[in-house]
Length: 147
Image (tube, rainbow, N blue to C red; front, side, top):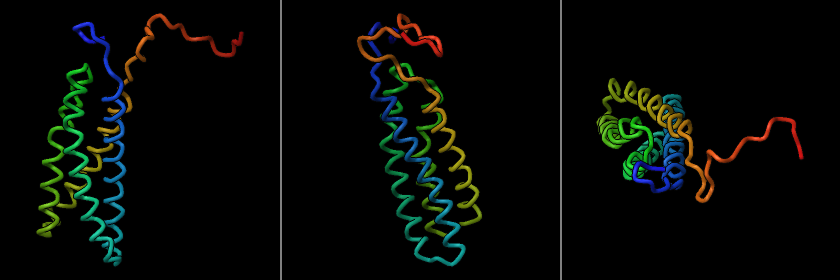
């Protein structure tokens, strides 16, 4: 329940988990693609750029979900981590386009760390109870006991 007594919807939690997970998978893929390019697979560079643009789009779509989730009672860290992400990713893209690798690579490492931290936060945040089920009234069944 929220402070106004209304039940907390589950969909923003689930949607946030999805977008955060996609962002983390894409971030890890970016490091693999960068390594592929540095190993001589030059097609990996264009795929790296396409995945980067996709990451920006996912991060932009994630912001309103994060705002709604925070307003619904989600943890404050969600906004702190989600709001700057599209700007950081856009800056990362500019650095890459202009081949400023001295900044692009370290920022990429930090981006992977941030994306995985945000995903961990999303998955550690418990989902609210299902509509019509009071979570406090449901007692867990002891392990090994069957009726």
